[in-house]
Length: 341
Image 1 (tube, rainbow, N blue to C red):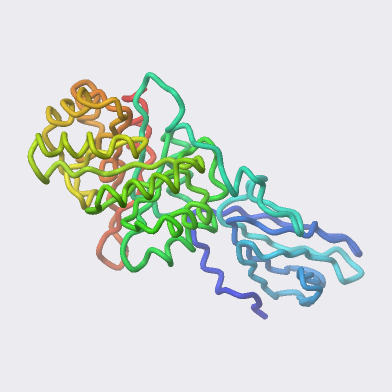
Image 2 (cartoon, rainbow, N blue to C red; image 1 turned 90 degrees about the horizontal axis):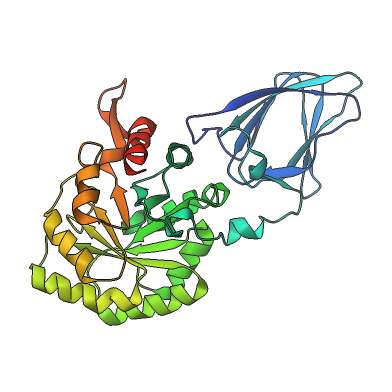
């Protein structure tokens, strides 16, 4: 028998495997996981799955049960001999991911403190953009990145925020989380931040100064950070200086990218970016075609508060069935961190 609400797809690339031995009459704790999916397979004995609503599911030798993230569960030995159950948990078990029955996520997970990207530092911070999974986010954190960025643009925004909200709350509090979006409704932006436990909105696209001011008023007094992207391939140096001067009072940082689209892997004139850093007291984040071969030169020439990388943090893997996929590369990210430090 195969039971549960999903097909056991294991949404991440990593998992751990445990063999549980449960003596007659004993049970596990009643708990749920913030991000982990679990697959239980009974290899010996009789098991009762106890659900939060009081219902039960009986499993015998050879049966499998799949538990979604957030689904409370408990297993009990319903027989007279030792029961053995193989448990596969993906991503691998972390104590911070486990909540007791009826326990809500800790305050720190629902409204996290500002991550280390926003901590005072004399050294430039590193933000890795284009993160799409829990595995990639953990890899960025473990490699030493200060922040991650997630794209939430277009018609897939609602679906993506729902997917991300399953695992983002379990990310370490030290990791700043940026949501890249063109959304301008302040209420919607606040809900996106609450659902994801992110600490920063990075606004893309073309918007009026009144719109930027209203977003700032909704986010910053509540403790969230607000970053405005300024594309360097639009306008001329004088108009970009005017743009910086106009938006500076309403934002916590300005991100200078080569293009409004981002993720192009193309650089721009760093001398113009350096001139804007000297012009404004507002922190500047530099993006656009930065990788391990030029990050030191970018920092030396521009002196930004932080560096934003996307293509420079990735590698391309061929797929067995043909085609290829782009993934975050922990080795490349670590090299960027080492060069910055």
